[in-house]
Length: 90
Image (cartoon, rainbow, N blue to C red):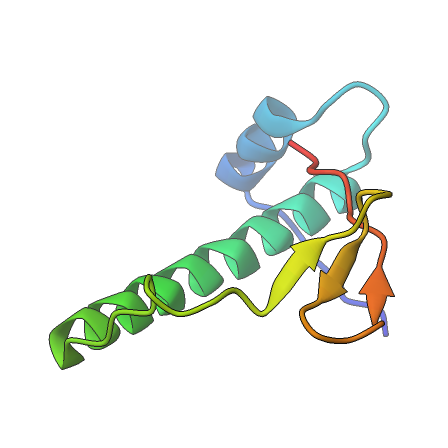
């Protein structure tokens, strides 16, 4: 799918202000879309947290459903199912 975009003068200023070395306008727009997606996810998470708090649900006393094995992989508690832990990107 291809999307056409004709930036206004103000849009072009924003694109240029946030463009990193070697990035195209498309790269900047992709980052912006991902940031918007992340923002929406965070807003939904806040709503969920508020709803859970209002319901009085407290999972802090529940046992974890996962643990780390000796190699640092994540294991589903009580099973042999493991996955490699991902590095945190910032």
